[in-house]
Image 1 (cartoon, rainbow, N blue to C red):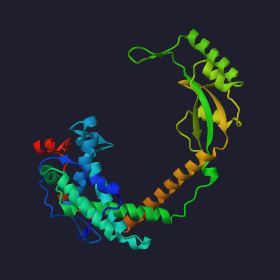
Image 2 (image 1 turned 90 degrees about the vertical axis):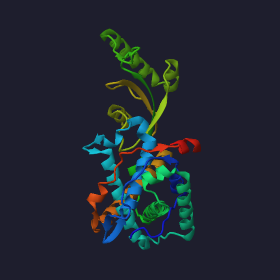
Image 3 (image 1 turned 180 degrees about the horizontal axis):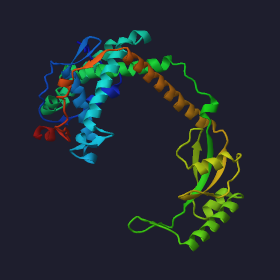
Image 4 (image 1 turned 30 degrees about the horizontal axis):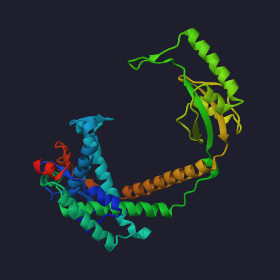
Length: 341
């Protein structure tokens, strides 16, 4: 069966395993075959544990926001339970396929890493209540295997990133920076938080006032902003900008370094901007790193997808359907709480 030795690479993964949980029982047949990958069996017990561990983490993070029915809520036509289970299947298939290609990238799991994982697995079993262990279907072997899988994914992703020949040019990453101050086109909000519109006369008068302020700002941008009580902020953008209003970006593109715009009017705000840097070197370098990581991530995904296209991954749907998130986990606040639960 898949699952030989068990390993975790980053200490972060080992630490993530040591979460004190509380729960109830589990009725899964751990010895059943949950799936096969290229003819090799993957136990339902391991698959169930990984799924329930993901459930436990989600219960701890999101239960207070979405309530006890969150796993049956539908998003884009599928429940949160089904979506999570699909993600678990994809993760299992991907990582075991990555394991099959470790030699291609000179990746191996060291004895030290294996020992660390085994220790982390023991710690996990001792940190969690007996009820939580039963509900997750956890065994020390399953915990260690999950950590070993995380290690494989971590090390293989890094190796694939390191082997990538992706590059990013200055033109792709180029960033421009401008300073700006802004005012709302509405009068404000009432005590109930509803927008209060200016009357037509007030709107016209305020627009004229902002036109004057914008004209004065051409001579002393920061001074005029301070005089009228506006806070000056900075904004950096590139060719793929989608957050700032298009009218503001269009005005910024038309400015030379040091120039101040005319008044810019959008549906919600007035803006006055000053272009501070036509080519912000520091921001451009940061954007280069971001874009390079994006390219490497896309390359990593393409490689994993290629492995999956050539693989034969068969899920035992009848057994997998028995894995349900109908019992919620709690996070123990103390040893006394854990004992009581």
